[in-house]
Image (cartoon, rainbow, N blue to C red; front, side, top):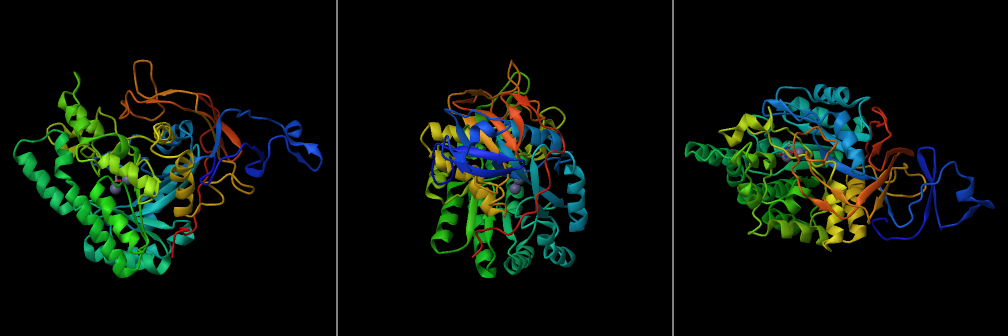
Length: 469
Ligand code: URP
Ligand code: ZN
Ligand code: ZN
């Protein structure tokens, strides 16, 4: 299955590379291909797809006084189990730090530890003369995108003047501007007022981060991008009004893109409000504290996200994998939702959760491949090597069994491979299962068995986005 169609075919892999895609039973130079290879993986009755590309992850991200609980080793291994064969993680330049030093620290964390290939976007947490100059050198490092934050004042936040200057670099270089579009200063006031009034439960995180704040910031980012001519990619879109902004700008011909995440397709603010457990009480809702937040199902946001994936108002699905345990991490926010580290871990489940959209008729099989692999490759300068099964491409291949079944969850006989003490996806049942995963020709997952090794994954130097105009 590709982004554009499906056919019965044999895929010939030679070393790390796809050599040919052949009609079943083909001969090559007079020899029977299947009879002359070292190994045959029988995918009869299953889908053969290009390996998933998760273009938004945060391994070992320092956040809220703690650090995301998956290392590059554990997180990429979990990704492999879930049919994802490449990630693009976010290297971080913190306030006061040089971009080069932030990037070097990320190479240090990831190098030699990954199960699958990995690239980096650059978070620019401090836009100043030095970092603006350093950004112009990012393409030489194989980095073709950077992320700015309109949220989190005092941490990663950029004001409009900084955004404008960074977007001018984006226009000049072709680096994709990725935007966390939420009005942070206004949100922080609302959050303070909620806490002052005694509303400290996790649920109020989503009340403070109102959709109006996402719509407003998305519009502001679009207008600044229009003014400067920068290509814009809005990350973790969750509000239907934010999608309307993207659709409006795209209809006017602006080079604007958006991704959503499985949590914004399936989970809701009402689910979070209703969450309670013996262990945590209403603080159970902390498992679903992420930014942008889960949105109200009554207001129809989830429905709009699925629709936007069909109409191409949104182009991709990434996880924003940013895992934290409840113990010692999420629980930092007991009594004050603002101190709950933001993030959900889903890297292992993205391909399954999106395949569920095929089963329920939300998207087609081809769109599943496009949203999870082909467009991510094109958007972030990996296409040809990744995101497609064709001669010359890396042999990153997933055999997916539509007749298999995946019970997602943690504990009580269930397990996952992410370094988390809970699952945000407890109880999700998937009609489908990752069967076999190849990373550059090596079988790294077979059934539930991991056959790879730490360090299999190599750094991906990326080119510019194919979507530049
Ligand atoms: O809650 C989230 N999304 N945590 C990760 C950081 C970010 O803003 O993507
Ligand atoms: Zn973000
Ligand atoms: Zn993120």
